[in-house]
Length: 192
Image (tube, rainbow, N blue to C red; front, side, top):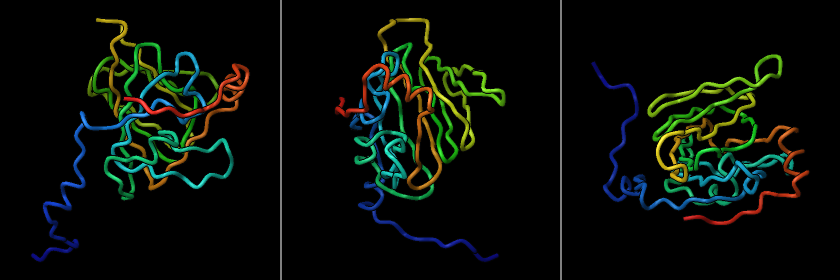
């Protein structure tokens, strides 16, 4: 039997450029419309991909925000993107959607994944470490750290994988109205 799929040999230097060490990642706590909203503070780490999307309007952004989109630890475009979110309990993004699939994997702590059902009502499931929740394109969703045990100031980590080469995110009209009513924008600031 002969191999069918294309195979390539890779140098060590090429492979080392495709390795990301968690303790060396540069996070961003800004660049998204809700970055300064109470209950939305978080640090996002762009590990793989998340190239800035071509925006149709000012409401369209990278799922990790403009800052993190420019500094992927592994800057490739191979059909998927991977990142981490670090947040204290009670924090996560406001309701938004993507033009591709988004899958969450709880790494530490407990995370709530919420979505709007077919009647526009919000439902949710909670994830413990290593549990997975996968949203299809177009579903309005959000996630929030709901860890109740231990130090209330301790951050937990959620991994997210989003399909596509330059995925786009858009906050719901209600989320944008709340952000505008608070007089806040998505000003970016670098974090840890």
